[in-house]
Image 1: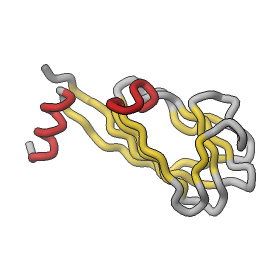
Image 2: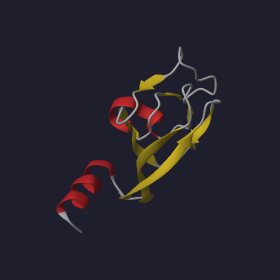
Image 3: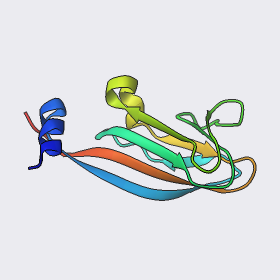
Image 4: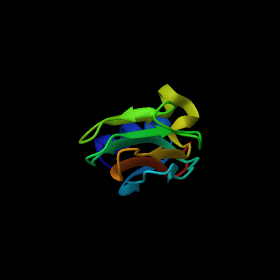
Length: 113
């Protein structure tokens, strides 16, 4: 086990894995990230050419969502600062045209302690 793994294990207990994926976001609101109660951290980066709005609520819109600017806007959520939002499902919309998100989630895959 490397130093990083040991630190994470001592802080949170268990063993963790970082999982990254690229996901589409459409003009119509839709779920972009599924609920995962074993997730302790989520980082989302807008890779696309259009602005994106995200929300843990399905009614996401340009007036009720977290704004991620085109070409690199991002947000990070972790269990220490944001509690259950790290593993919550998230909905997205890209009113100016379809866009693309990179999502990295840190997920516990074995329990410790």
